[in-house]
Length: 260
Image (cartoon, rainbow, N blue to C red; front, side):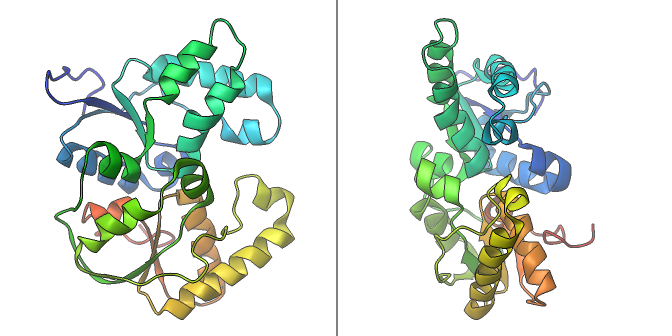
């Protein structure tokens, strides 16, 4: 929907925070998110001025650049009813860490808190705010689900994706052993500690293979790309997709890591 869309008197206006990885590597996740949000009864706007959430700079200790990014994000998104991200990691940065970043700042603290109250991860927004209990999608196959760290621990995303996946016609969900254990990506962690990261994702990939599932799903593209790379290196033939693509029934695009 256009950034200049007219606000409906009855439908909340949601600004989609696309995220860098979705924009650059997997735009289909953004389109799936829009479809799901519109099906939940929202008008969706994608602000063209959006940039990174600032998490790489934040995790690296660069508070000056993080603040500059955060100020721009808040100014761009604070006028909407809700801000929704198809990523627990980016969502947690916006919702949990922006208020910490501006704590004690007379000019920005109140704005950061008001902004953070509007921020939600996509699937939790659909289930907890919009009250969705099912979707109309049909996807044949078996899937397993990885609980990404930020979504799970900072935003409480656990039951919501499983509830909605249970409603996908033709899909059988198989639980993943140690589903709540990190995949080893951790943003800059995988760059700073590559050996530890590789050991973690090796265990994750083997657990995925043990499920016998056709697809591996999660709510964070960084985790999915990390796990997909390891699955391919270990010759474990499992499709990797963002959960939004399955919930929206938009699985025509090749899986993550496939040829477009």
